Length: 543
Image (cartoon, rainbow, N blue to C red):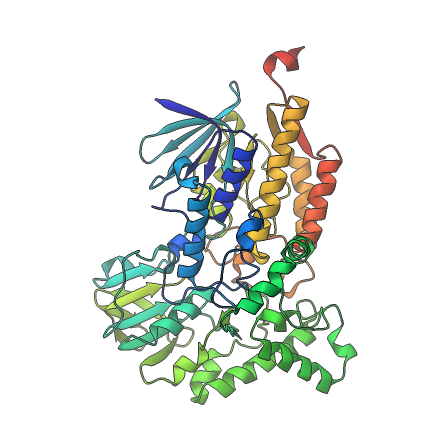
């Protein structure tokens, strides 16, 4: 039996819950489909040791429940996964979201019926649902990227991907553990595991820049000060570049070499001591001027050398010349480099000693064998496009999204794909997504999409679509936002899709800033939804 709703939403993280909240306000019936057993999205799945948000807690909370802003108490500056999951669960309780969520269910197909102007959605449970609107609120970082390493299926010990960490406690004490990957997740996991493991091997494919995360307890005064001005702070977040504050007075927007060397390095030290990613924005041309980026990157390399006692290990931990801080996702850590001073931690530099295979009881590199009880895979995600393609979405004329995007994704505003009517992609390709505070990327998208649906009601439209021409124009603009960025030349950068072998190189994350993006989207809506195409009931269209 097919169940019918006004809208079907995929994912019960912050995007799915916000979407459900707005659809209810609009009087629409909606069902959220979630593969997990509860709400939380990213924070439900990423339970690995050390998981922590890299956006300040007081910024990383939903702006659509202002009463909760006045009530919720965050314990420290950068929240850990358990605390954020508790917050997400509280939102679900507070708004009774779970009654409209179908848990432990995975979307396996979504097909547009053009004659009836509805989406038909199937699941792994054998369900059949229909809805006028199909809204993907699946997180941009929700489809794990599994490494293709010979023998990985032969390993007889405990094997975990950080993005699918078990709900039950995983015992680390007394075990020989390897962490594969040194991105943000790998750095966090390694730092935490090193405190408990009998021995930890950090399998480093690529040396990474990481900045200190100072996360002091938050006080009543911290909360009281912001609660007074939360409404204006929220509006500032919506119009800012990344919707998060560094709490440091840096001369952002200036050219670094306008200042003498002693002033520049004083500013670098100030940003470093602040304990955030402020260093990357200490001058406006850190991300665009190779000479400036080299100086800032060398500054960080010297910090790494000062933290790590063994000179050879320190050099292996320093990204090679030509690598720049900020070209990849910013990593902030709570003592990562210091773990390599511990007797129970070994850095395995895979550039010097590559993995040949995984064996039943460990890792075999070209020159060494590492016996293991546990292998932790921290190789990230098939970002942004992976979750959408995995749903097997089929649009008009039987065209599959996977085929449409065979040469790389193309969208209009990151919100819609031509030929897929009434499909909205929250934080889709070529939108700001996780390059900003994702809570506010979600806020902007959900608000825009729901206002578009209200506009459809006002004009009597039954479908909304876009055109290949609008997509081409938007994708060209998205490329313009990155063409002067140094990260465009990084060959292993998930912002550009190059972390997954065979994935087409493209702009997965819009890099012109959330505030500018928001203004552009509003301008398009005010210009009679320029670039979008509205359809009407068959009878009205014929008339």
